[in-house]
Length: 544
Image (cartoon, rainbow, N blue to C red):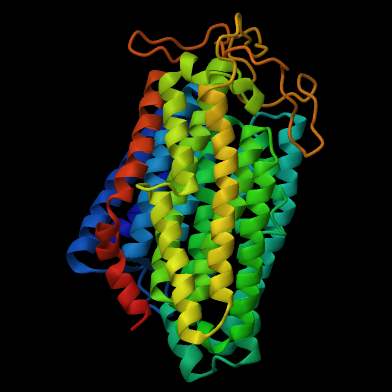
């Protein structure tokens, strides 16, 4: 009966999403406790599912009385458990920050739980059409959350994402329709069998199906040149929303691409269709270079790390297209590691904005003196993003790069060497902008008298949830100009949180989570062999 854990894990956040609105008729502050209980329960269920998979291998559950392939199937294996753990941990940890930073209100927490439920279903579904359903749940809830502070800029960013996301979902659904016409099934494992028995890897309908699915999910992942929605969405969303969206939403879409590529179409399909994989590698390489270069040009911290995500997801797409075991292991490790790194980085950026009003690179002068723990954690996470060992960021890049070289040596195709080269160049770009952040933290403004803080509103919390472009000019690259032009040391905004334990003027619970996230990325960097052992059953099945 352990397989019953799968539908329960999806049901808990989806049902809980109705409670803040229902209880809100009587209780104004019902949303946060409901969300906390639901995400804690999801974390517990995720742990139980992980134990069952570790003990007995993959779990599957048929919904209702209809067995697959006719009925709907839920599946948990080593890959889905890893991504589900990321969803559970990040969704629970972000709540601590959302409680102090906002947005607040029962409707926000309903949307938050709807997003968590959609992500959980997306990770656990074994059916292509239901993957579309959960993609739409994730998309709709994300659109609403990005616009949660009700500013004009956030609404515009949400609308842009809605248009792009709708196109992506439509392309994905069209691709699923083509695959259904060719195979007569929507169950992932059954479709894998039917592609071989009824169609072929050279069938134009199957090829078109995969190309459309890749294009649709590519829009949601935000690879270059279809990435333009992501920087605006990350920058304009409330800080707590950016934290969970940056860590999970595109990560879940990249997981969906990986799952469809290897569970439905298989490595043999990729090997038989060089034109498709070559196209994916070209797009991935362009995404890696363009995302890194654009990130290095930014002054707004959110936009900087948003463009960074374009590059990092390009590496994951490259790992999928390379279609060898080493690269796929790297793609999986980088998928989970990047989600954890971006959770920590955007949480740190949000804490600096909450306590000190710092949103621009120029606002960070000597932040390590005013907020040593926050700055130190962000610096560690930034170095992990660069790929400095030991960190989870290094492991992912290393395996992808080695897999790329192995691909070129095995097949004589220079594309693999090209991917390894662009990963190296991208790492140099990443080092350049992370070094700028660290330089501002530890060396800028040293010895200057006085200081500056951000403009703050009457509540004393500064520009936390939304962003008013009237207070900050808009830079030519789409970012905002610094609020000040000097290098004075970072000073807290009026009413910033205070703790007797640390000098950082940020919420203690969120600071503890940030520090834990930073050290977790380092600890995982030492766990290369353990990660290989965990994912080995999945990789063995894929490449059998």
